[in-house]
Amino acid sequence: MIGCDCEVCRSNDPRDQRLRCAAVARTQGATVLIDAPPDLRAQALRAGLRKIDAVLFTHAHTDHVMGFDDLRRFTDAEGNLPVYGDAHTLARLRQAFDYAFDPSCKYPGYLHAIPHIIAGPVTVGPLTFQPVPVPHGRFTTNGFLIHEAGCPKLAYLPDCSDVPPPAREVLRKVPVLVIDGLRERPHPSHLSVSQAVEVAADLGAEQTYLTHIAHDFLHARREPTLPPRVRLAYDGLCLTV
Ligand SMILES: [Zn+2]
Ligand SMILES: [Zn+2]
Ligand SMILES: [Zn+2]
Image 1: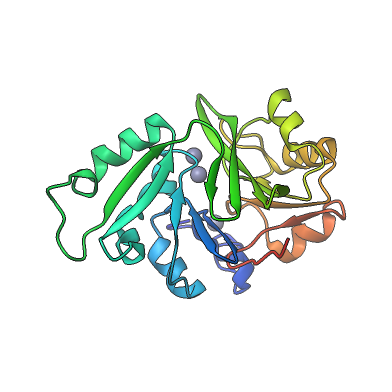
Image 2: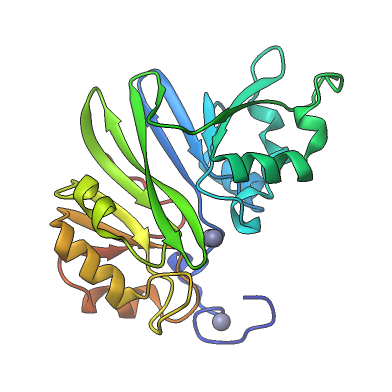
């Protein structure tokens, strides 16, 4: 947090040095980025990310879209990159990055986004991303249940204030759940840690990771107090599922 001197913001533990939320799903033949946060460039350099086949957006909040221009390094030879989001998200991207959606702006090195409105599961190579709409305060975001070769593998819901019954039915017994766990106190548009732990237990997820964490707690001190099947995610975490 800019200007904050709390023990988390001053911590030397790399797990406490939290950039914005994003994820990459990778398998043989497909690499898909979920969200393009303002620190995408630093994150992609750190992760050694060289190639992506498509980008999926959960929603249009600034902390998930403002790295959009850095996607120019991931286009194909013609400068194209498929971009998926709901209609509102794509409209906001068009507003902020008009040149990327303008066919007359095809200069070398520019990003040319090929927009796709998410109207059902999105398939990229062997990966399928099933949208899971969840409330995020007054907003709705798309979480994604990721399937590989027809098997549900991992659910990613970084921004949600609730997981209503229809979403819980879709997510029941998911092997790995990555879910919003912003802070200790309730928040109008995010799950608190205890709310996220309740969701994880109800779903029967084999393993859960909390993400979108603010600066309420030190990783090393908080994680051992969580139920055994709930962990804290951290920047750079790799999960093999
Ligand atoms: Zn702080
Ligand atoms: Zn958000
Ligand atoms: Zn967010």
